[in-house]
View: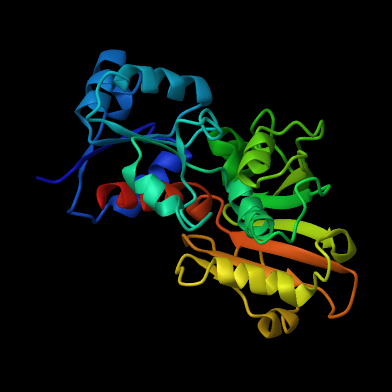
Length: 310
């Protein structure tokens, strides 16, 4: 009998992309609430409790409510895509490549917190260097990033695509999170193994899907003897054998004239780069991904598959 999967919030941006990825699969049974009934609490609770895995694509408070609905039903496992549980000690963090044991933690977990899109790129760059002892825990990390506008959900999609919207956005690129209190900062700090919260500067570009995350570093403030080559070697070793996260060879990176934010749009992979001049004092670590792929829906499906393989 095929496992039953219920996407709570299937009509939102993330939920729709999860459904698209699963449309042709016959190894699972998708439970679904008609859009007209999506606010029917009794039907929703029934669907949640009849699922083998519930994938929550909801705002934080609604996710917390859904978890309460299944708390007493140990037959239901949960993947939550909100920020509600990403640093909760009882939840497995759903970045399978984060360390060598993370995929096994996800496989055996009842509750899995899907990572945020920006943190996937930032942690993907930072954590291997922390694990290798190259990046000090108290380093003043900065994270600069640009995302496709679909990361803002249906509201931002309407603002960017409908010029008649009352809050229409005409800018080709804009910064936000200006008070430096973005909801992803605790996640980056905790899972990046940092003692100091990074300075995070997010932005949005006039493209639907895609993302670039940058972490610039001074080599002289890292572990003694750190070089562009040693940082690249640490990332390469960390992701050895992985097929979703790819570390681009240094020679290939040096030949690139640019990095295109939409290169991985529609894909569930991530590319990591180390840029800089050999012998120079600075490097720029760069992650390239789809904000709705490895940064959201693609990661949720990957985590679901890991849980089903247990």
